[in-house]
View 1 (tube, helix red, strand yellow):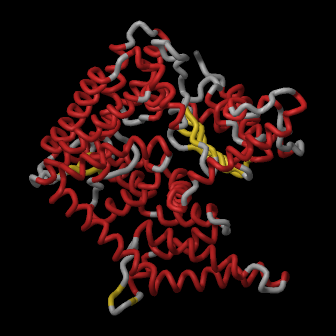
View 2 (cartoon, one colour; view 1 turned 180 degrees about the vertical axis):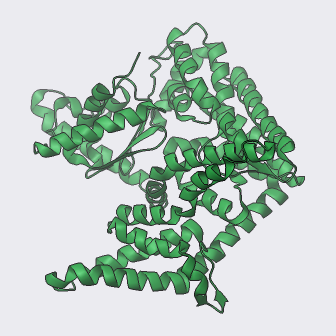
View 3 (cartoon, helix red, strand yellow; view 1 turned 90 degrees about the vertical axis):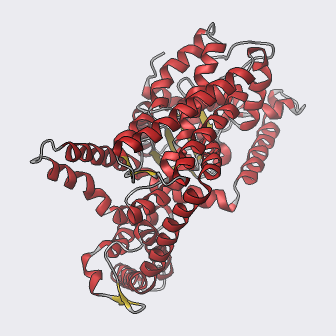
Length: 511
């Protein structure tokens, strides 16, 4: 079924509390990300039933999983409808009987029209309690960091692909007149990524975005080479994205402190000046040095981890990455990858984490074989598999493995096996890294870098993918039984996903 972006957007808006409940709209490669004034107004169950919605993560906001391509079109329509409603004075729709969550009705409460206010209130309390249980300080902090970097993902992907293409042309000795231009286009964004990080940090934490960008720009300005801190000259870019994040965060707190302390007539002049001055000097004489030390420690730690415990580290990282994707926390790893690329020229963690997608593909293929007579599920797998092979795993997670329950666990096993394969070679001295962030799966091949040459690096990564495919397929084929679909469907409901519902006693996944 072809998804109509405007109809999908119109169906989503009332289920997140209406346009008046939305404070910001963004998207990544697969998810519509909504910041909400009152997250308790989200009707997650009804959202999951909207055609085209693959899954929902409602925790401190709302992430609606729509899949690659579709998400950009739906996001544009959500923004248009929200802007139109704001112009018309749109507000949050009143609660209705249909908004009462299913768990309330099952709790034995009265269901007549006269009981609607009590049911709605109880439903709101249940949602708020669930949100508070999940809103741990660590999760909230990771989500805020992810919100800073998620808007940068399209540029990271585009520039990464161009950098990989340029590397292939340089290695092959082709188009020598074009490669310098490609290198400039591909590297310009990364050279100024600190400015974008600063802008988004201030926006996320309630400051003026352009002031955040101005303070973070200090990190990459060539003039910092003339500044001495702690007895040593600074270098442009020292501290990388971590320094930019810290600088903009400090600038935001300085700006908030200044607001209201100056007369209104002087606020416009003094607040930006004090913000840039205080945060800028603190960045030069403290934050850049500290962030540089942390960045170096991250690079050293990652190298030690993979070179000494590579197989075990790969097993753990590859096996746990799919749950991070399911929770929407995987984007919080972007600054870690960016730091490793800045320090070492490549991130050795991304090829290991990419193995989770391989396990997902293998598990989905096994489900396809097991339930080959289920036309709806097989169509879902066929449509989501190309994206899965290219490292975009959400369509397969929310459309196939997570609703069925056990295949999600066997997919994690496949990812663990692939990660252990790549980690084992790291222990043997054959390092595999990625020179850019974003692509995964087969799309990561042009971005691979290693110490044994392109052919050996690609062979190790390919071996990890094949291991992930094979273990994910075999484990799923051996442990998943179609007649267990009803039980695993209930398991999926407890995990918070309902991309498909499996009725009790059914052998098929509902569309």
